[in-house]
Amino acid sequence: MNYSHFYNDYIHAVYATPAAKDSLAACRVTERLPGVPFSIVASKDDIPEKHKNQKTVFLTATPGKKFGPCPGSKRHLCCNYLTINLYEGCPIGCSYCIMQAYLNFEPVTVNVDIEAITKELDEVIQSNPDTPIRIGTGETGDSLFYDPLFELSKNFIEHCAQFPNVYFEVKTKSHFVDHLLGIPNKGKAVVAFSLNPQEIIDAEEGIASSLAQRLEAADKAVKAGYLLAFHFDPIIRVKNWQEMYLNVADQLSQFEKGKIVWISLGTVRYPAQLKDRLGSRPWLYDEFVPCRDGKHRYIQRIRTEIYRSVAGWLTESTGAPLYMCMESPAVWRRVFGKISSKIDNLCAIFTKVHR
Ligand code: SF4
Image 1 (cartoon, rainbow, N blue to C red):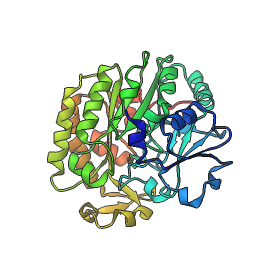
Image 2 (image 1 turned 180 degrees about the horizontal axis):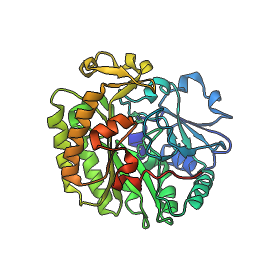
Image 3 (image 1 turned 180 degrees about the vertical axis):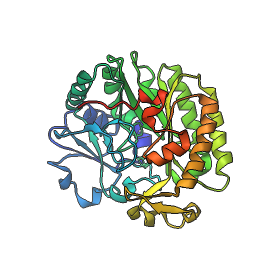
Image 4 (image 1 turned 45 degrees about the vertical axis):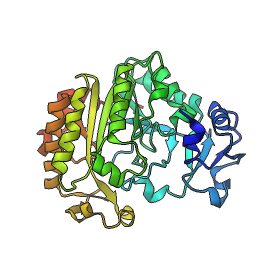
């Protein structure tokens, strides 16, 4: 990958704290993007106003919790996923991204203190030697958009590979997997792609890679020895949505059964403060209701209809375990007949981890 050619468009300034300035990540960025100004600041607050935007990267090694349970959503079933805040912020620019509502004027933060995060991780792994543990970095930003530049995911893949009960997941809307293919011991590392029909990618997903590029990257990853996961989130009920999502589901039949460890589903949802950014998109005229976590969702009947259809197509094409992200117990019962803890192939991946 030609780093300076590609990343020069997305990174106009790099700032680092004194503790982060000599990290491997800082060395890589200065070496690979020689034309991009690199400055030291005591904290994020000291970045000049003109650089407080998503084209600035802020490297930090500040102590503090960078690892913990996914915040989930009030009164919705949680999948007990653990998250590492490795990249906080994202330049891809999806219209529906909750972060667009509050992180737009923030530099993208990269937490380079891998050793400290790994220590926190090990404490949890050691307290749960027999529990399947799912850990991922795709909650606060795209796991792989900047990763060819900083190469931080490699550390976690290699580290987690020694624990047979740990699934380490990178989640992306890019196709940037080449730098991960040659890692010799991958353990149960999972390369996950968020998917949508190409028409929705074009309309809503900013500079994300195309569907074909993501599927091609998934093929490379699985051939290199990774497990795969897919996330259909958000599913948007646009005109002809059935045809479009059926087509994407069909394309997943190309992957060997058993290599896809999970697929998540989530219909589009938005907090009130994102509404203005979404403007007058035709799909917003559908029937949305405010839910108990403050987000607007399609009414239950519509959500149920969408989930039943998409889950049916995906079960047919992949046979993979499916779950819904941030959904109410009532919708779980309507779609799957029971809640996650009563579904055999989900019990394992939804097990609560002791901390
Ligand atoms: S790729 Fe993910 S984190 Fe980035 S803008 Fe889109 S939804 Fe947000």
